[in-house]
Length: 202
DNA sequence: AGCAAGATTAGC
DNA sequence: CTAATCTTGCTA
Image 1 (cartoon, rainbow, N blue to C red):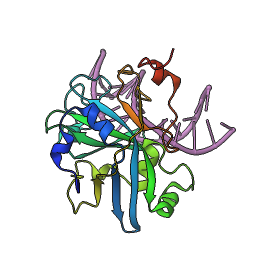
Image 2: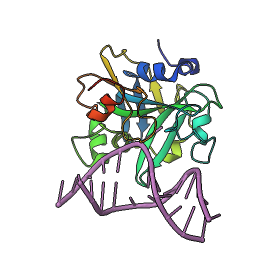
Image 3: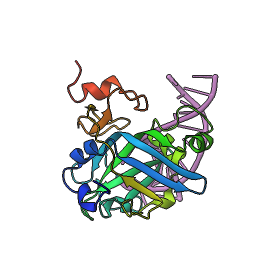
Image 4: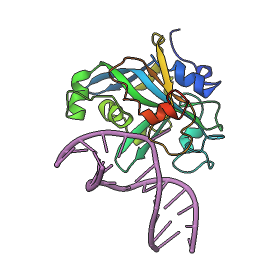
């Protein structure tokens, strides 16, 4: 596989979230190329999922979420952190994969500058957005075009993946829609409640 | 028009 | 454990 096609992001959103592990998120900036391997994801689906921003239909904020597959959907959370998602499913459906963690691959120095820290570069949704310089202005962009400065590229599939309930939400916690590469240091720690919610712990 | 909650993070 | 910080979307 040389490049993603829109149809790679159509199908079961949960399966796509799992499959996205190992793909590369690349941002070409004036200071150089910033890239990371996706090691933690979560699926959100408007139709059935109360935690999804599109659950109550299209709103000004969630509009990009209803775009075509391979679109970027970014939003501001807690008034200060940007979160990055990849839209999946045909236009109008409203589903996306939140990228929660990256393993830094290229441009570590620039990432550290943006983060003003050498550690904790990309081990959280807000942190990776800051490290890669992702902003709300990138909302609605196509991530699959070969010329896109912000793009998604296929990578080696992740063999050893774990799953759990999604983190940091209050609705839909029982859905096993979070995926991560086992043993990767950039994956955020799984709270016990996220395991219990999906029956993985007593 | 007013307000509570939020797909988080850093710092004490 | 809690403050920070501000937009969104509901309720009136």
